[in-house]
Amino acid sequence: MTKKRRQSNRGQMTPPVVQTDAAGIDIGATEIYVAVPPDRDAEPIRCFESFTPDLMALADWLQTCRIRTVAMESTGVFWIPLFQILEDRGFEVCLVNARHVKNVPGRKTDVLDCQWLQYLHSVGLLHASFRPQQAVCALRALLRHGDSLVQMSSRHIQHVQKALSQMNVQLHHVISDITGATGLAILDAILGGERNPNALAKLRDRHIKASAETVAKSLVGDYRPEHLFTLRQSLAAYRYCQQLIHDCDREIERQLEDFDSKADPPRMRSPRKSSARRQAEENLAHEHGRILGVDLTAVPGISSPTVQVLLAEIGPDWSKLRSASAFASWLGLCPHNAISGGQVLSSRTRKVNSRAATALRLGAQALHHSQSYLGEYYRRMRAKLGAPKAIVAAAHKLARIPYHLITTRQPYEESVFAALEIKSKHRAQARLEAQARAFGFRLAPIGG
Image 1: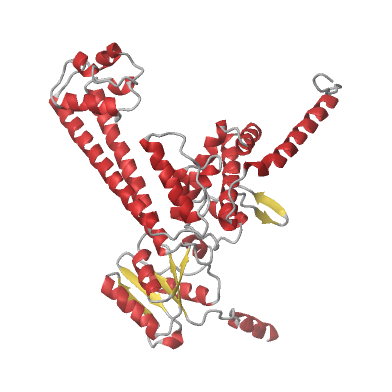
Image 2 (image 1 turned 180 degrees about the horizontal axis):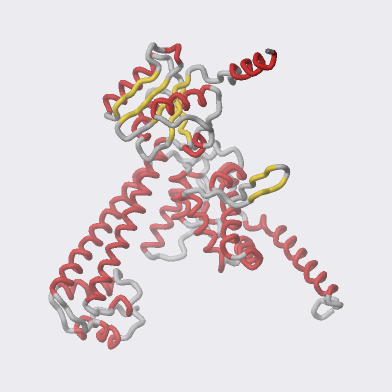
């Protein structure tokens, strides 16, 4: 009898409620289920359609039920309109990673799912995902749209090359960039009706390494109407995408102008080249320095596009990231130890779909020929661990440095790593001396 009573008491035990004014929302493409505490309404679970008037009615109902905080899963892009409406109404919206909710066992239906989210949020078992301020989200949407346009543009370039290959015109095998000044001039002449290879070869730029004879020989082909039609449309689509990319860049520049400047604008480096492309990169770096307060392009491996991605994905305020280690973990650039029984079962990095992490990995690869401390670190890790792990290790360092610079407002100083370089050389010397002693030799300095 006592045993049965003990089991009954165990079944009635529930965690204490932390968030009394919490609601849970299950997002769908056409229907949205919302659950509030049972004592707030006679019908605590309601279904709303995904139209904007219904989302407004949903927010009104939550205000009537005296709800202060709301939890929802990040399902595709369906959550964005409701998130923005609730945020504008003053609700504290907890955007939950679907993986975290999945790891907590529960029943999987639309009605029970919103109830489960409401319960987990009320007892404090859910953690909100990082989401920057609205201005940063707008910049991020434009930057991601620009990346999609670049991918579409590259696809049209492939169509141009395919049309040339079908006509056996080998121009794209002779010049490095088919969309450069020489390539576009020759393509326009071909579409204009010119078929003389010598006349087409005269359009080559003087910087082209291939000779005029080689270019003329590559332009002898089988010009068929169907392939010329494909070439014309693909080239027009490429130029249209380029115009869209230009417009997107102008809109991104306009969005950057609306960001507040830091108290002490950093002193930017003087441009090393006078080309239009280099000048545009310097202007972009100056704008990023004005917003962030530091010049991140002074860090080896970090360029203006990398800073652009970091600004669009995180924003100028990094105070929500509690430490550099937490930032690296959020990016998936550090070991994710799975420990059980005091033993490390796995230390592989987490699979994280982060554009910021991808940009830092690309920056780490650029350190291969750098003569800085970071370049030496990357080459040392590459020789020791191999290229993939060396990229992750160098990207980890590249993630910690911007965090320190932005949070402390200190400029990048390469001299800080001088002591680390001396320490690294001492370790290498001690390692060589130990290896020499193992083979019965002794190292001696040159001239000693």
